[in-house]
Image 1 (tube, rainbow, N blue to C red):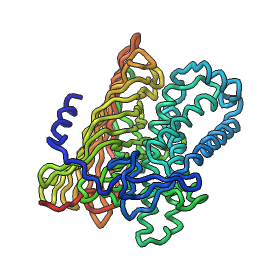
Image 2 (image 1 turned 90 degrees about the horizontal axis):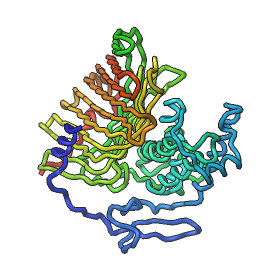
Image 3 (image 1 turned 180 degrees about the vertical axis):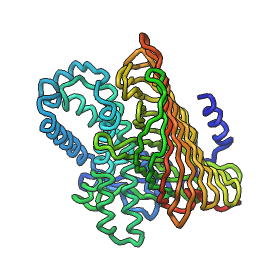
Image 4 (image 1 turned 45 degrees about the horizontal axis):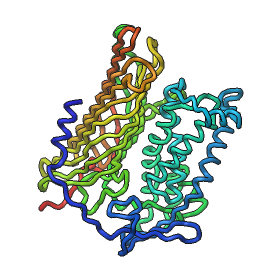
Amino acid sequence: MKTILLLLLLFLPARLRALEPLIKPSTTTAIAGETVIKASTETAKNGGPNSPNRVLPGEPAVRKNYWLPAIEIPAFLVLLNGYDRVAYPNTFYNSGIKSSKEFFLHGHWEYDQDPFWESQLGHPLQGAMMYGFARSSGLNFWESWAYSNVGSYMWMIAGETDNPRINGQITTGNAGSIFGEELYRMGSLVLERGSEDGGKPAAWREWAAALISPPTGMNRLLFGDRYKWMEARDPATFTRLRFGQSGAASVSDNQAGTHGVIHQEATTEFLMDYGLPGKDGYRYIRPLDYFSFQITGVADSGQPIRNVITRGLLIGDKYEVGDSYRGVWGFYGSYDYIAQEIFHVSSTAGSIGTTAQWRLAPQTALLGTAMAGVGMGAAGSTRNPGDRNFHYGATPQELLALRLIFSDRVMLETTVREYLVSALAGSENGSEAITRIDTSATVRVYKHHALGLQYIFSNRQARYAGLANRNQSVGIVSVTYNLLGNANFGAVQWERD
């Protein structure tokens, strides 16, 4: 942890550029039961240069409907509960007025006993759906975050007969909002980059956007562009679609012995960096104007999603040092879900950090992110359990991600993540220390096609009162094919002074 804190001090700027508003704050007016926000030269009491409602000159007015998600979210929860009743009859989904009244009046909040994937992945997916209903009704990030958290509370009280879940409330509303905003922005980007000439996006783009963010697709089907909120403002982006095949793996477990694993696994991974620093004229006004999103799938019908790893700048600003260094810094939100072969870890957290690009030479660039913060996390073993499936508690964590780019030909990457799922506010008297190192080399061979070699090492150290200490590690080597969104691996060019 000390290493990352030191790196943060080195990364953060010695001086920050003063805020320079492009226009004066927006004004709001009510038209036919809606709130309309448009660019204006007048002063507004509820606006400001960094307002999440900011509308820049040339952008269409924004219509916000607060009633629409207030109807759609409860309807979604009713349908979800109905499906669960049919799919899992005579279980804790058979809730009703009696159980809802009991939970509302008396609470009995506790940590759940659900499987790791359901607790740490299913709940954020549910939260992302509820967030999407609000976001696609014209609401900004914080308003949609509130709707997602209220929807989560409604489900905890009325959706199940089990006692309300503390960790379910945290992951559904908070991790779900970060996850949902990234999906919303990626879907919006698909539409906007298909209508650069002002025309209507192609039908396949509409379907693709709806697949990425289903609530957005539904509200676009019902209302067209009436509640369009997103103007991407042309961010610098980098995307990568990676197909991998593990060629070797090793596992170490002090309770089960050390042995090699003859297990080859095909993986598919999608990565998107959105709002990379350095682009002239791009501003970091709204939450997640910068984010990094990564999702990995495997050929496993029981658990097809292996990883969801996200981080985004919630509140911050850009800075520069000299003519070769550009970055952003501030308060980040993150949601990580990592399901390793023999253990797993997940967290919802807030961190102080920075993301920057350093142009070392005309054809060489170093991109990096350093973060340190705390949140609530879960970790545990998936096989030969000497402890419960997962332990939940306050989780200090840190991240250092580096990407070294040599022209448009070679990219070297290393990302180090550390989590300490502590006993503080925990479900057990114990702790889980997880370290994950992901390193890879990628060589572009033709246009947007590249080949790569990847190595992932993960280590778990579990310490519980009354149980023997457990140390586990797993290392996997994979050969990959990469389809790149652009040939420069995400390096951003800017005008030098």
